[in-house]
Image 1 (cartoon, rainbow, N blue to C red):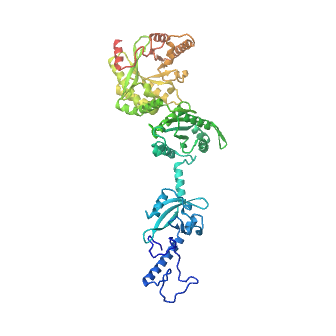
Image 2: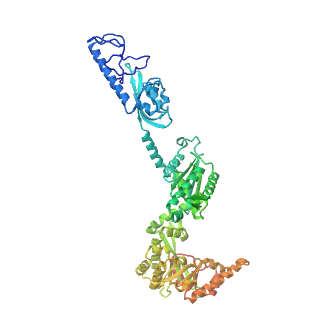
Image 3: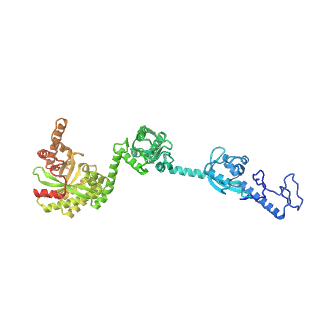
Length: 633
């Protein structure tokens, strides 16, 4: 049996190893028989062999027989290859892997059997030159019928007695099924099972690769010149399709949408269409050439999706909102690109849906600021970063201060003093309005109690804004009762302002809470009256004590102007007068907001309006300013 090193006495022809042949005890036909007990001779030169040499020859024949049996019957493919890369012999298993007969293999060049791919080809040449003894690799084999066959190949170098390369032994294990299973698993890991589009994982792999330095990414472009673009697509109203027609129809619609997007917009390595999850898709453009390319792509996506889909007998029409981002690779990151595309998609939704929106850096900065403020709200309450200013509510008939509205301000460590319009909507969205509102309520009641102690005859009330979410997310009645008890403020000196849209909503819970507060003696005022439902019939049944007219009505009481504007202001004056008369008939007081001059105040007084507030009387300020006005009265 040929080993790692074949002995110097091994015989071969033409420099090529002689293939081992099975030995038997019977002589070949026509061969001369040795007389019994005749000494064994060398088959090549006829020289009688010594006993040791004869024993060695027997062992060699036995070894060759075992090798032949193992070679022929092995379950894995085996082949002997000479130093010219020609097959000496292959076993049946190897021939079967290639779809050939064993007789076809001798003399065949190895490259007709195995793909000559680097770097495994380079390592094989090193082995043939004797620079290494063994190599392992996985190679694609060339089947006669062209089908895919993969083998785990081990190549061992056999040397002659002098240590020179003699031939190679190739052993091949068929791993086609394993490879195909691995390919299927890899495909499933990188593709969406429903639509067969690349999934989020593959999308992020391609995105990360696009942001690598030019050399690593395989690009020949100079650094700083490469650009990237992204269209982030969300189907409008898709949830309604699931809810009305069923999820199976929704799934079929997603498949149809994916097929249309892939067919129309996938472009090899340069343009990837992926499903990000749910009804969200993304089109990634590597090496984009500018904003116009991406906006043109977004318009094409809109047109493609607006064409009706035929799904299970239903003719479905969908629209999409698309966020578009296009920028240089340098100076950005994958995280920045995704964040900005998501924000821009949100802008498309907020602006009315069925549209694309190009990322705007200024709007993005504002969005980032809003996010930072929203996340900092609750900690800011705990750190005591908020303060309350007060604006007087002045009686138009007597000019006296009847009360004061509390207005919260945020002393932000980075952005300075922030007015309520900068953070109150964020607080309502995030739920931070509940702890913030409770803090403002207690601070205001405590201050009103101080005014009462210093000016007991003035009976100055404090008016605090109450958000609808405070009613929904907390026990506002218990909170108010607790604050009044803790501060010692009489309930009659607390007024809570709530918008009419919150009071007149579909649920009865706000009405129940407000009725309980009114029963405690707390004053209830409808803020911004005239901008919500304006259902006058409700006024007789609501636990309300005052109306605060929205500032848009008060504009009519500024200096009149000719033309249509003057006629509109005259109409607004008539409306205000009618509202005041109605409120008085129902036992309610009326407060006007936004008074800027004496003429406005006088004209409102003539309509019968009870109190007013605005810069004409005083701007919002510290509580000491209210105390100073009360002292002067």
